Length: 369
Ligand code: G6P
Image (cartoon, rainbow, N blue to C red; front, top):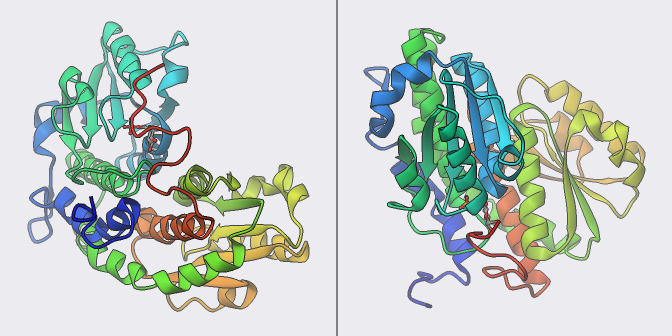
């Protein structure tokens, strides 16, 4: 086992560090910046169907559901197709409205999640086209879908999903861009710029990983917290959800992810000097709004751990701690902003003596309903 961990103390840490490579492996051969080309071979025959879809419905569970939430922002913003994201377990027990012009995308690392499989069965019976995004080659979901794209992240052993998540987001980015290219919703130069930015992500993830000592120091300060709040807006809201899930899964600290603006409708009541608030505060459309949310937390003596864009000064001054990530296109921020949150939960869990790779009560793949 020590050999399999490749010198890392835990599989989770190894898998976090593999992300520059796994993201690269995911887009390799699927884009060409010079030619302004992007495509997913596995779903080539269904491209028309996607381009003409009335609606895309994504079904998933757990971390894969968070990737789907990021996918919603990507596909709506870049390809202008309405997207709905559903928990597979809720979707399957409703009487969902689906028809032949809808495309259902099932997202699953393992490709074995019982609820996701059942949701696919239901959508199929209503005549929808079903595409899959799976990591495990030959898995049940990859076999029952009409077509799909693999994430190529390699085996993920740690129960808490890390590299599979960033690979899912990468596939969803490629999918959004390839639909956008076909639909003509993005200009040629914007498309090329985005492809170039995606190609630059692995090197930028590497840079974020170099900050691990800072994340470890922050983790040491908050390792005994009873609660944690994660805030984000736009495509960083699902990043906040994923950060909170990671922390609760492996460190057993109660954590909640919230859209930053919703804080005033409830979670703000919880804020005191004991409460760490992790804020996704990178440069972009809602930056100024997030700055006001940070001020609201500070006014109530909450502790701010901010994820900021390199070179930012405003949030740096307000925050108790900050972790810088390289600048990139706003659509790609989740791929970078997720990394420090993974590291934070990892270090907190290790410091609390938790079994990081096999947290209590959790399974890598949930094949029961
Ligand atoms: C379990 C795992 C999670 C995973 C979820 C969905 O809860 O512990 O890490 O996100 O199942 O699994 P899937 O294989 O469908 O992505």
